[in-house]
Amino acid sequence: MSNEIVILLTACGVLIVLGLVEMVLHRRRLSRIPIRIHVNGTRGKTSVTRLIAAGLREAGVRCVAKTTGTVPRFILPNGREVPVYRPGGPNVIEQKQSVTMAAAQRAEALVVECMALQPHLQWLSEWKLVRATHGVITNARPDHLDVMGPTEDDVARALAGTVPVGGVFLTAERTHRPFFQQVCEDRGTAFRAAENISRRLNTEDVEAFSYLEHQDNIELALAVCEELGIDNEIALRGMWRAKPDPGAMTEAEVEFFGRTIVFVNGFAANDPISTRYIWEQSLKRHRDLNRRIAVFNCRSDRADRSEQLAQSYAGWTQADEVVLLGSGQYIFARAAVKSGLDPTRLVFVDRTHPADIFEILLGLAESSALVMGLGNIAGPGLALAEYFANRGTENARN
Image (cartoon, rainbow, N blue to C red):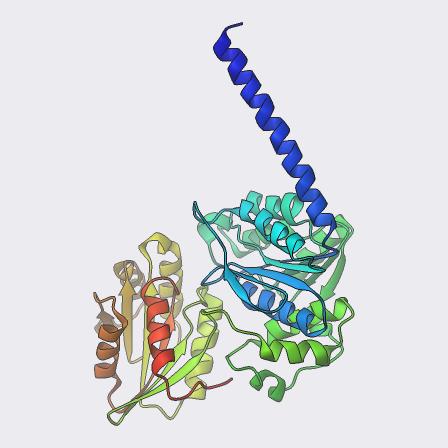
């Protein structure tokens, strides 16, 4: 046997041993965290993760949370947030970092947002890295169909990879509920529906949030806390105090030389069902404004998403102007016009600085306008949302 082969075999053996040692250490860290909550779903993962963690903190549970929303964050037991270190970009293996952080903080609970898209990686995240005591799926909607599709049913199957074995599973999903119930039965896991919480939410409960939060998300987070024995009133009080993700849906009203713009940050709602819902709801809330402007931030590396939104938008209540930002403008425009959108309503913007985009929107607004950001939060979307938030005279509530 040549020296090169001996060296190669020795190196492989060392790597295998190191991998086994790391696996044992990881399992030990997991065993020191009695409550492990794995949050998955198409929409609302980040919000629900933050809400659950806030409810636990309010009840005195020492909790670490990790979100992968607009800006990846660890949320420590005192509520302080620190960035997630990503030397090589996002990778599902960083869930090990979450477990290490929680163990180092002597956490009683770890709440992590699933960051995987590929079905096999979602399975890996749960079965090998998190091993949740409580699995959570917000909803299953048509998004990332190039990875989890091609159908909505396939999305539900992919998300089911994070349903735990022998634990508790909670969801606000209704359309695919029978499928998830069957998965739970197969894995010996108890099924809980979010709306079955003992305390029903009212309008005042939802309006008490400082930002626009979906009732389904609140109910689901309350259901998780209730499952852990936390009183709904205590959990809800903590949720009201929770800091939202930078991509959370907020409103900002800007007065500029006699003209009024109400800006709604809906950039993070990037699947067609969620996006249409918040668009139609915003139109109802602001009937008094003269103009309606939809701003779609389009990414060329998310061509499927742009096409889905464009095809769906053609059937919505139409805006007076459709402003397109980002690198995938023509992908959206082509699909929207093909689906029946009047091309004269399209406004292509090649600017990226939010002040320049604001000037364009101001010119379209006339005396008053509802301006809603849609599509994607990355790039000019987040910059524009922050621009309005910093200049808004009022943050409206739901």
